[in-house]
Length: 119
Image 1 (spheres, rainbow, N blue to C red):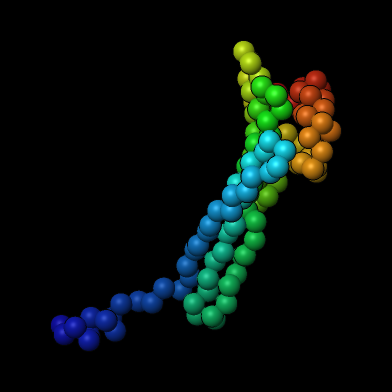
Image 2 (image 1 turned 90 degrees about the vertical axis):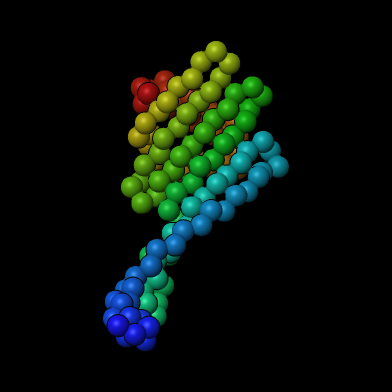
């Protein structure tokens, strides 16, 4: 088989998958990592399924650290609370607006979720 024949005998890719991360640091003791998903359809020359897939947000409050893993595809939130001498994992926390712009309100909301048994 010649080199030209071997190139033409290979099936072409129909789709391709690409994702990338966006990292950001906040002024008020937090850090955000976001995953953006993009699928490419080579047959039709279009981008499909482009959007935010998940985020991990870390919020520091004095010695306490709160991490939020938000999965937008599955509409799932996992929260980890690390305080000196203790850690709590909250699996499948409510998929609600956590308002990361107000740290005190956010932390109070997490404490309420823990109080009402989402741990």
